Image 1 (cartoon, rainbow over the protein chains, first blue to last red):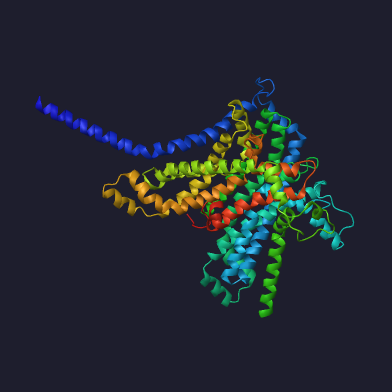
Image 2 (cartoon, each protein chain N blue to C red):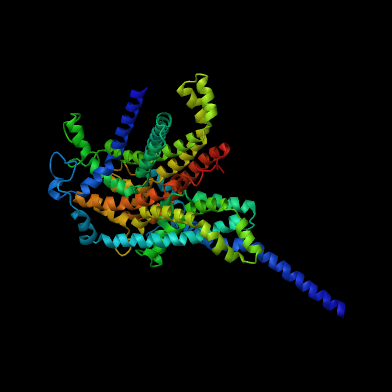
Length: 309
Length: 277
């Protein structure tokens, strides 16, 4: 009788201890539950919701299968917008990388004063942290035909006779939109590359220099290997961000003239909120999601092999 | 050699002037009178300068209300975002969590940073309209909070893993509970990091445009970014007023991020650029 009672108490104590241990082990996950649920609810659930939306006709709500998904192949505007987006991404990103990298090398090689370096660093942050809509305002002021300072300067140096309608013809509108992106984001490439250059060991550089290595060879064989993974990282950010470009385009050209600057996000916006066909827009957004995921995965795989992240 | 250096610096100074001239042009335009605006050739310096455009947009056009909306939405979302990201990052760095779960969660949260927002905003628009939340600040606060999480989780994860655990452990050995150790020991050490994270996420939310554009419709909930865009896209543009809203819109993130400039690149690259891990 007595022994069993003792056993019972022991067992209860053990059970209580394992219960406490289990609770302790679960605590971290319980704490994380709220934010994770919120992320799932506000990011993942809408994507699931999209599936349902895209398989129906928005007007009647009736099930139409893959109709919305197949429609894109006959949609000239969609194909146009894919092309415009591709042109935008390729031009913006390559120019930003070349300019930013060149600038970083130039400053790194020529400016030795620490004060000037940090001054330049701070000044280059400014365009990057300007809200895209404010950058759109600036571009509007610069490019507008009558009041615009760009036309005025071109007149002044005799480069043009007649005002250029920057935002009213296809190629110049594309140029204007691109210029804002390049103005804002070249500094990003510069800042990252500049930070990377600081990490190159000085003794190796000095040794190479005393062996008479040229400036190009110093870059090609010593600095570039240090920068490669950082530049890949920059590519991941810039390509995925240019893929979603929206804000300053809407302010500057609204996608026009015609559909020359109607990039994917802008086109999607128009389908959803001007034509008010949310179902078709949901289908298109799947294609956008697929493109984004493919780009992200490819670049990330490159990065992982470079072992940065 | 000497002459070469002078030339280099002159070149650089010229580059900076040209590169930042667009800012100057916006500020100058914002300070011009209407008469000054249409003078030809365009005047480089406003004469006489006036703050009338600022007063006109803020008070006559009612943009003060949009400014207030932006501040309320961003502050609320920053606060909520920091609490939520602490709820994620504290257990990840301080409690025992399986390494696979930790890596998976951080990776997933990072991947959300690369999700094109238009993909989510269309169904979200449909959902909040059905819930009757269209054109409310609450809808924006919710979305801004969630979309700030990738940034703040990664920032705070970096900061938290740098703060040594010894002090907290010592306090707990002395009998303090984990909660007390968190509030009394860790939080004071984390304060500068929280401030930096808050400042940067505030600036990013302040600049946000697409969600606010699609999910609001009236000054009841519209943010300042929407005000900027609506002045630019209206039929007849009043240049000095448009420039004035541009200046206000740019001034806030610029001031904040200059204050937190040490962390800007780190934040924008999720900590990769500062520390390689």
